[in-house]
Length: 211
Ligand code: SAM
Image (cartoon, rainbow, N blue to C red; front, side, top):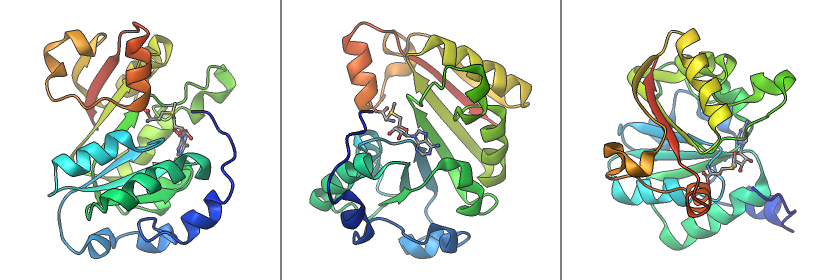
């Protein structure tokens, strides 16, 4: 994601009704924010929000929360949501490292990770959103039947993630190294990065797993 500073994005985010501002105060009370007890699905590192917005439109009985670290990226998702006004979609600007301060035990039903930053240096491995450190955090917020889907075109990151999932005792439900030419492709919603990389001819890897 290109991180050009977008002038005024912080101020626009601070004033936006679809962004949850004191997210730690929402812990344990997300149902109240949405005004219903529908399941909660989150996307961590959602970028400009194309994927989560499509999901929210397709599944009005699921509540979606898009998490993004950078204001300059989040602002693009907010602009789209201002047009769409989807009642089942909210955003948080935060670093996912603090995710356990924002969601209570079992408060989240599903996690999506799409084209997460690879952090290629070994010494940064624990920053990868599929590292065992992150998986441990996810276990604490996922509901009993909760799960996670991860897509990337980065084979090294995918192999690392498979290893971490196994080491952490998670169960792999399915794995593909070429999603777009696999039976799992039906109903697939493309992310912005997925479109870009598959247009370049890169195969897309995807895993579905549960704690
Ligand atoms: N998911 C989008 C897609 O597939 O098109 C964007 C992918 S982009 C490569 C990764 C995004 O994750 C960036 O917008 C980045 O700011 C965000 N990100 C990376 N680490 C994060 C973290 N620890 N917490 C929240 N967002 C994060």
